[in-house]
Length: 345
Ligand SMILES: Cc1ncc(COP(=O)(O)O)c(C=O)c1O
Image (cartoon, rainbow, N blue to C red; front, side, top):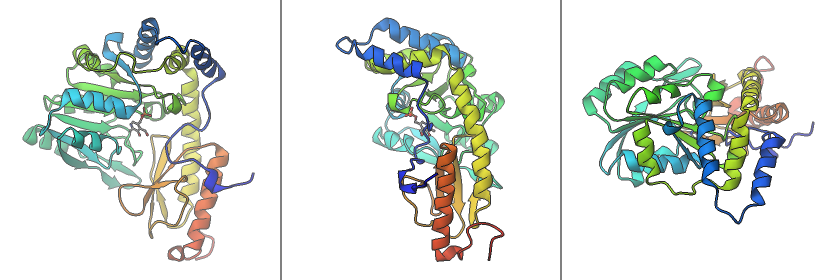
């Protein structure tokens, strides 16, 4: 297989293949009615299917376009200028600019590197929350960019929720790859909001469909402010068809989980590279002697020097990426021309 690393696209954590034909056909068919606004029955059906998929009621769902817009919708309802917000460090890069634009004060809660993962000190976070009483805490679980699970269990989420009156936004963008979710808690508590997206295991990043799960009062509040036709007819039609039979997303997740193990093993063999275990569709790694020169479409530098993140692609993509990495390491004198452990040095 020819390998041209500049052609790889492994930096956005997308799924490497399109969704099934029936999903694409539904989108295509809907476009023939492009002159008409999206029908409200389609919007209602989409909410019902999202609710069923997440194990909640339709009154707990807000169907929306991509994460950044939904975060803006939520934050502008949940916080005011000057409010204190806790974010993990590192975390998904989209929250902070929106919160800063809304005039919030941000405090960072560090994840700590522990062996091949990163973790949150839950007891010290609860302590901090009790003392400082933030209005909002955002936790991407699993975390981007580390790929590590953060709270993982309903018990941990419950403990956090009972420690304060503010909102917890739990971003479960990678839930299918992680195999856990606390979404069902939204009907039992008043301060939990869960974010889900169809951009990852559903392979629909280009359609921009995501959803919020929250107590019904908050959903009403957000929807009172959101645009009437937030999602296009084609996006809704595709999402409805995808959710009618979501089994393909679970198969996609199975593929990613297996391929993640294989890629992790290959990265582990590269000299001077430390990959971290992942519960997502990407692997973060640390270059122990600095970042070698690599195409930016392959991986983008992360929160601190020497860290980069690589999405899981097709097996061919991943093999090509590892080869490109090994080549870049050979050319970088800091790695002493020994890309694979045990081969020279
Ligand atoms: C933690 C996290 N949340 C949200 C998103 C964005 O989701 P969407 O494609 O729905 O905007 C991403 C995308 O990479 C992500 O990593």
